[in-house]
View 1 (spheres, rainbow, N blue to C red):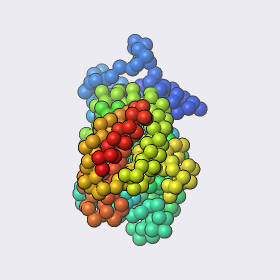
View 2: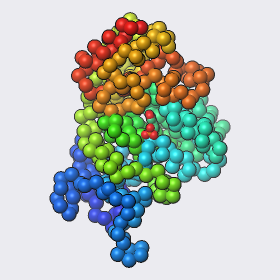
View 3: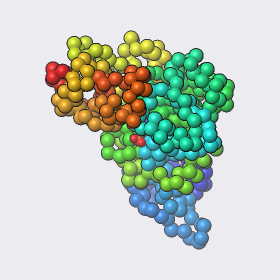
View 4: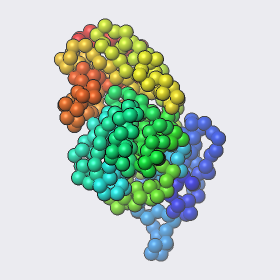
Length: 399
Ligand SMILES: Cc1ncc(COP(=O)(O)O)c(C=O)c1O
């Protein structure tokens, strides 16, 4: 069962397709033609409410904060892509994180990777620190992680892999097994890989989180989040909280994501192809100190990346020469690479984490883990790669 029990009972949804590839799933799951008209593209159910035949007698949908047929279709598709039984789509990635936090018992210990999206860090340290206890550790160091788990007895281990922005690879299978020994849940923020390159649930994770804003939608025109799991009790809690608190995605945005997902496979392949060439170009450039890309044989966890991922993704992190001033000149000069927060769209973006996406992490902590002022994070798009490289070459001359 991919969708909520209410929907399965009341609304005949697209049949679950077995033994098909990722592209077929992305294009067809949740995308059956409209039953009423045969429209090949299901309509957007742009409605806030639903007619009832008698009080409490409805067809599975009462109010769009609780359920919406377009969102249900997206949930069905995302659950299938992440090989999960349940998916809940939310208004943003951080809304999804918020639901996870509210679903934990009050006063829970949460162990988090020390390198994570700055907004998630801010949510944990400035909002949820009132009700939970957060411990940030280098989860790629298994001794350090084991000691932290024994000491804090967490309810949840929260990791990204690859991490944002240092592209460290966490061993999902190892971490999930350790968590299980201590009756903790493991959540993997799979935003950077997308289900095309990595499925954390078959590796042992309990929860997958996505900022749907990024690769899943792929066109930088909506904000959204999603949670996937095989635990019905977790899904039920999140659904209850979403209905009670209100961070649900609009039907139009869900429809756009359904559309974007159809090209997930071709986009991810193109992102990766371009990212590798951009990373190689940067690594050989005299104005660049070093480059992190999980696809490089020299990446410290390259072997692990090869084992648990089906590709290395479209994100590249580079340390430039010339300090903050040099980085500023580079970032002010790029043209095709837009200087902007976010990632995962078809257009190339470049970010300065220390000032932009990770500014909410205190400077000392940022520097301690290696997010320095000369670090730039590139979300390599699917433009012609020669044009991208020419753009970078031109901007690097300004350093
Ligand atoms: C890895 C990661 N997780 C979560 C989020 C938060 O998602 P959203 O911006 O959709 O709330 C982001 C946003 O940049 C992210 O990069």
